[in-house]
Image (cartoon, rainbow, N blue to C red; front, side):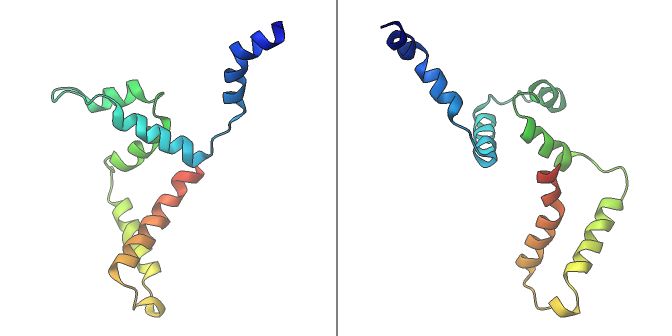
Length: 115
């Protein structure tokens, strides 16, 4: 009888531990939580908020650091033009502008997943 009572008390906990989420599900949950978080005030420091909440939203923070930082040099923009030149070659000159944009985006952002 004690085993049945223990199962009723702890069975739900054990079942939840057995469920493993995929990376996509973890990211979706994190982004959903981020979107539900309270907005900061107009006078608040967004950098301080990000630092304070980085542990709650580690993947969002990683993307924000990569995308929202101000480059100290023009090297990143020069690399972007170099990448575009590699993608749009004489053999690929008929690519639509939207396709080129997507290819450049994927080329530059696939490394976020690997890091």
